[in-house]
Every structure is written in C-alpha cells, then in structure tokens.
Length: 286
Image (cartoon, rainbow, N blue to C red; front, side, top):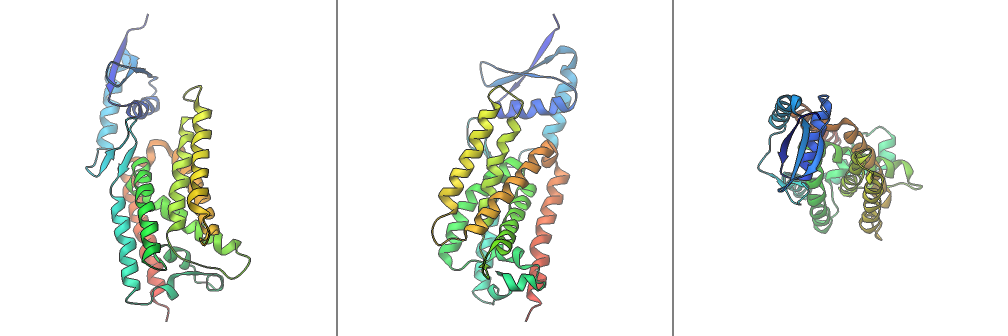
C-alpha cells in the first residue's frame, strides 16, 4: 500500500482551494474530514512538493485585513466594497454641484450618434438620494461577496463591466427612446456573478449538478425579487444580471489565475481607466 501523508486545513473551502492548487501541479489529493476541520491526503512521496506549492500559493494570495471569512465553509466578504459606496456617494455629491446627468446618462439617440461613454458614466449617476441609498446598500453586500470570491480588482472590474452591459442592453432593447442611469445594473451583475460561481463544483462530487442548479436558481429568484419591482429599469437590470453570468463564468473558467497579484493589479488599473476615460470625454461636452 502506498504511504500517505496529510495536510491539515481550517475549512472545507480552504481544502478545496488547496486541492485545486495541487491538481495544477500534477498531485492528486483526497479531501477528508479531520477531528478539527478538514485535511488533504497525498502520497507521501509528493508531500514536500505539495507543501511547497501551497506555500507559494498562499504567498501569492496572502490575506488582507479587509477580507474576512463570514461563514463556516469559507465564504469571504471584502470590506473594500465600502470604497465603491464612497465613490457612488461622491459622484452624487458632485452631480449636485455641476451638471453630470445631462452629460453622462444613457440616452438612446445620444449613444447612437457616437457618444459611446454614456453606458459607462451612467453607472455612477442616480436620480436622488433614495436611489443612491438603495443601490449602495445592496451593492455593498453583493459587491463585497463578489470581491471576496474573485479578488478585489477582478471583482470590481467584472461588476462594472456587467453594469455597462446592462446599460447597453437597455439602450439596444428599448422599443422607445430610453434614458437610464444608476448602478442597479452593476448590482444585478454582482448577483449574476455570484449565481454562476457554483459551476466550479462541476465534476468534483456526485452532488455537483444539484449544487450548480441550486446556485443558479437562487440567483434567478433573487433577481426576480430585487430586479423586477415596479418603477425600475428592468431592461438594465436583466442586462446586468445576464452580463454578470457571462463575466462570472469567464472568471470561473480562469480558475486561480484570476486571483494572482498581477491579474488583480491589472484589473484594478483597468477599472480606474474605465471610470476616468469615459468621464473625461463626457466632460468635454458643452
């Protein structure tokens, strides 16, 4: 019988993450329950290589004080989503002093004549303080979970791209001239990204299909609850949710690559540029 060695982990989520790291190195671990938490069982001859791979992975993905495990199975919440709330509030405050709405909201005919920046800038505009408060409160929670799952840079960039997708869908799908503004599409995009992450379970266990269907069904039900209430921009909400599904599926397909420091930094820079550049063009308009 082949000698075995064990590597202890604190949570099932951590065991699953580390197992993916080892599989990428050609080491096939087995996840087992331990007296405290879980453990990975590997061939004794691969133990040193397995520990070294995990050490490098942890160094690459070192924990940050604003990222906290909020459930026993390792669900992470990233409090950096507060920075997004601050940015939304800032834009609303700035819009009360200078005219941002006419320059930045998504307006069908304006986009059609070449004002491409509007689906980007409209994400940061809101009709009133109540609109801001609603999106900020729900977005703070959902975006914090998205950034906890996919890391800060990719999570923020992915959610923003989903929000832009929601505005584009509303612009393209409206039967009449359509005006839209607000971060609701981004918020629904977060919901889509969280719903689709369950596909990572595919092939891991006999119950994978149930987990995937359950995750997607939960996302759809929450979308119906939050995204189709009367008086809301349902087109932008639906477009954001679907865009979030596609963005999240892409991130899941990339696996742990999406959480590397270099990718994180690149996505953060991309997000900043996608905020600044469209607003630069918007502010050139008279």
